[in-house]
Image (cartoon, rainbow, N blue to C red; front, side, top):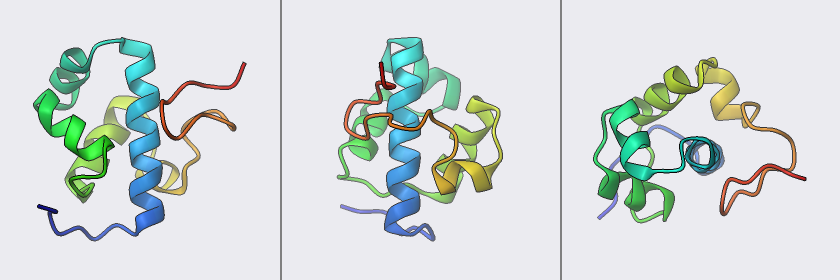
Length: 91
């Protein structure tokens, strides 16, 4: 079941990539979930595409990453070449 969202598919993809990238830094889904106040199973559904990225989730991710919401949605918050599937930066 997908939640209604105001974000475009590209914006959702950029937020998902940022979530995966943040996960590579904290190394645990539970720690990431605690930081953005979301249950780990909800994060799994979001990053797998089974659940839409909401604007509220995007704001939580932007706040954790200490970036603007505009940069997050535009995909400017992770290093260029970051894998959109696993979140690992290049190199």
